[in-house]
Figure 1 (cartoon, rainbow, N blue to C red):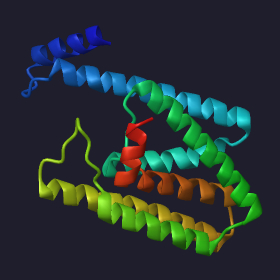
Figure 2 (cartoon, rainbow, N blue to C red; figure 1 turned 90 degrees about the vertical axis):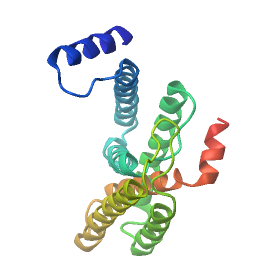
Figure 3 (cartoon, one colour; figure 1 turned 60 degrees about the vertical axis):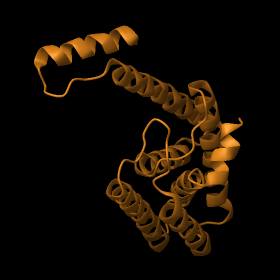
Length: 196
């Protein structure tokens, strides 16, 4: 991957795009894309085998979309992130499936998750990251507001699912993905995951 990053760096310089790319940044980006693809692929294959594909995809998509803007806790190696993420999202998929059958669509559950998500996002987003510092107060506010918007849109979508009375397990998949991502913003979660 390093050689690919170096080639991209040279290509960028040849094209004179203005801002010169950094080989290390390109290398980091390529590793991130590779590890993400492996992680999502593993999650989706195992979810399909376990019969929880739709619920797991709903949780992964909501958690991932929110994490882009809110940040969140990370483990200290890609292998640990892949393993931990796979286990967490498969458990959420199974729990979503079970809740959909056991509870049906639950307004109190929706309200509880909504409150936790909005308090967490409003208090802790954007979460700090060692390699991606928030440079300005304005940038931090913008990311927090986008995080609130993403969470609000997802909660609005699940509220309409309640009104329509459809897709119980997907309802819980979306909510559990939001919940996990908002919990990953908490300082205590950072401390716990640093020690895994």
